[in-house]
Length: 472
Image (cartoon, rainbow, N blue to C red):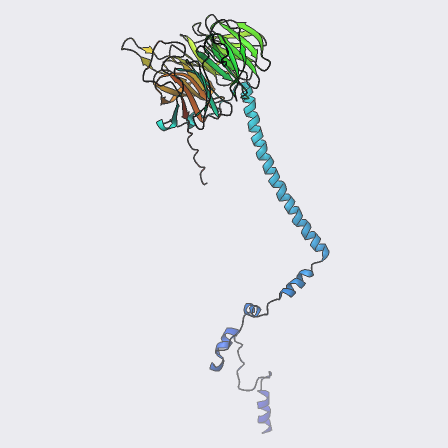
């Protein structure tokens, strides 16, 4: 028995596992949960996030205590960073504003330089829409044909003069008469100053202070533009006064006459300055801008002349075949003129010949085989732009666009107006065009259009709206 017992003891395993039992397998956590009894199947095990959500929320006092844990040095550092960030943003905004202002100033300076050099040409002609009948306002007050007109520098009033020897001041906004300077009867003493013969020309100073008017009686009358009170009378021309113009920014007045001369006056000092000669026939028109010079149309002598006042010299230009009856400066170096041969010319003051010449600008009139061009009786230009207007007795005012470098003249549109268009003026902003209409030509009675009305017509000019930028 002892041998048998000893053999059984030798067969016992060395490990602590009981005899006849297999070692247990260690199941993973998921598997061990499945092996639990049915009584423990509904037991829930919370995740870490769930345990955090179940944790009590911090009170306001605890948060404030945590904020108070920030040291004084850390707070100073945080505030300093915040202040520096604010300064940086402010400097960026100021830099953007300065850059914008510099761009604007640079643009204005560039325009000023181009204007002084006579090369400024703003493109506005293509923006003009064709005016309709509703855009034309007719002001009636003169008994005879309108001969000339001017617009005040602030575009608030219009002065018109006519063959009836009267001057009327109109309100642009209401169309009402603000003042009438009546005709003066010859040989009657004690009457109010005025013109006793056809008024042929007018000019207003660039500050709107003085108005000058000239007539067939060789007189130039100076008026206070605001009150229409008579100030002075200039005498000296030996024939009808046909052209007047103030030098921009001054009270220096240029006048020209059928006596072939050009005279210079100082209106502020009520004084005569000098006389210049050169034309070979009656001078028909005159214009001036800010330079100390003026330009004249020589009528039947077929020349346009630029007068350099300080040097007492002149430049002579040729181009039209007929009598040059009207002209207007576009800028300091370019001008437009019209003649009774029906042509319109663009000039550069450094060239003796026209840069562009538009023949038969208003078409032809007369029986077949005997056609003659419509006379160009008036021209106007919107200062420093490419927009030009011409008038005749062809039942319309025509708008033109000057091409690049003033080397081309393109027809834009026609504005229907019956009668002789004896005077044209653009407002300083280009918002409207004023036409002086008469039954007769301002210089004579070659034809009479009975259906025409002696009137001042205000033509509103609408611009094509600029299309919005893509994505705006």
